[in-house]
Length: 378
Image 1 (cartoon, helix red, strand yellow):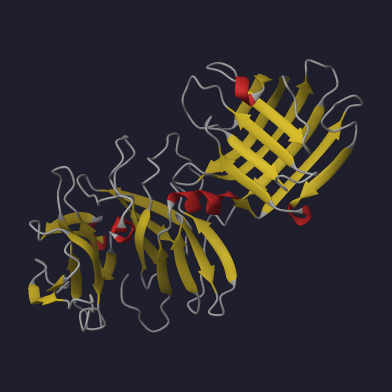
Image 2 (image 1 turned 90 degrees about the vertical axis):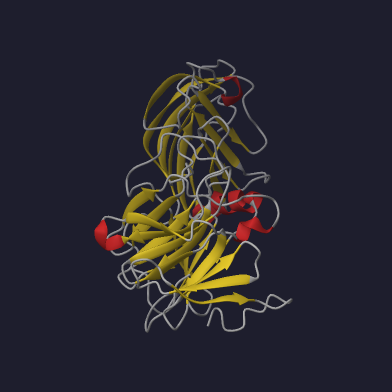
């Protein structure tokens, strides 16, 4: 987290356990569901209606079949639950398109999409039907943000059907005119803007692009580690850990231009941090000084370590420094110097971030037994 200047935003980064991260992603602030039911349909009971967020809490999430689940008023007598899954053969996330010959989600297969809509505590043992996904947008990590769809569902092979349309939206996608008086919190791979009084004003997902979705998934441990806001409204995000084994699991410097609403991502091979159930959730730091963005790098499985510097004025070109030392956090102090904390959690090295070779200008500062930073981070 970099230094604050007059009128600059205060940025807070919170890393939480993975189970809590999933829970945080499920809340959907805006949903509209409309339906009509043929006489004899066991789910809609021949009725019709509209259910929105004003009627109760909704949840939206990606399911294990790479599809989308929606739940209204879970475990209540008036609950609704929805499952939409693509055929499992392609192994890709559900996307816009037509999905005929759907069966119940639990029975979907390599060439067969899944559909399952239940109401109250009633559901279908078998399903035949079809659905149309009109639009679907995911965040950087493959969690659904925008979902509009229509469906026709028949239970137990019967002729009567339930017909419905869904429109769900989570968070603000695009421009984010964040007030300089407010706080920005990075939590569960989302950005939250709070007033100084603690009221939530808006939430913003981390995106691959404003209107672009990923087709595959990152490992679940690939999460935001730190972020710093520049005076020009660009947010620089330490995105990922490098612990995953997939092709997408490369740590990136993700850049959100809050004023333009655009995203860009800059991967660095060999950039990584440790990830374990212990205190490594606090590892990973990013700081800003002028045109330079600095980030910590840890030695993992023989890759690189030290400090990574991005030159934002030169195409985000990358330079590495102190490659014999592992750092877990860093910051720019009020005096304009860069302070980097070593893996031992007691030793702080001091650099001049304005110099081309990141000159060492002080320290090392050794913290006391109580890990008191003294003047290191002033």
